[in-house]
Image 1 (spheres, helix red, strand yellow):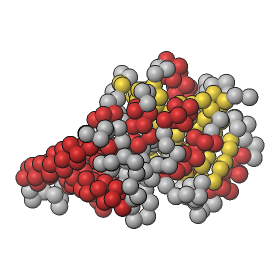
Image 2 (tube, one colour):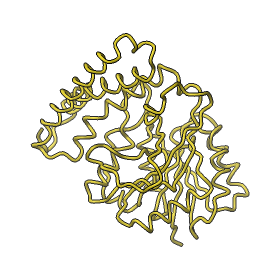
Image 3 (tube, one colour):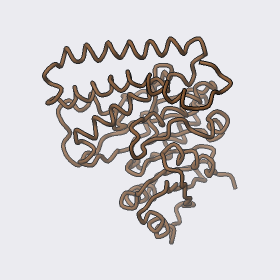
Image 4 (cartoon, one colour):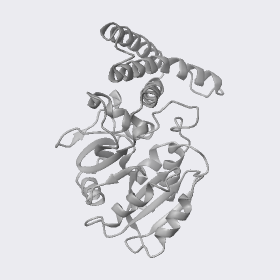
Length: 321
């Protein structure tokens, strides 16, 4: 029997978070005729597997499947999900994202209405354990919070305007046809700050001719614990997002464009760092928002050196820089 829709949940040590998400999925309204839930355990060291087994006992809503992906990194977990999924559409949900009751139905309806969309995201609202700092909205995108208004929007991937993978829907065959099996950007790993793993597959889909959309009817709540609002965490996160900039811009670049991208990324962000420092001089130690923005600009500038170092540390390919 063919499956219309797979909800794929990559998780790492998600034993405490999964129950709330699964309870939300248990009560989805008007889902497709055939759908499934696939949990990808990304090398967890807690009792994630046992929690899933407990839910599988007596679960009658739809097939609830589990697989284990030993290679650490969200990008590897998503690749495993695509290989294992049986649905023509795959809706990714992080284990700390709680979907609206009609999330699956809204995703399926939008995919039918926009057949040219290879992937699309929706509204992701912050659900904060503690009150965020003033003006937090300016940097909320670093925490995969997205609120683009009530109208559908076709993103501009060439400007890295893309949805996060936290609550993303993709066409499985489009991914299989377009996205390399081995990701370049892996996602958060111990000691590795660089982000960008959300955007890499979307840029390959764009390269293959697919459009990337925003669907306002697709709504989730992102649970933000106290720790993710701490200064050290946010600064590291902002810098990690910046460090992916150059590498992401190279994905769909032609050979003549690559030296120009290096120069523009380096000089453009050097300019942003200088002007931001002048504007917020004396405030960077006290103003968290300004400090995070500076961290992102600095990371974006340094992404050039990260890209060059990584390139020259790897074996020379058939493509010359």
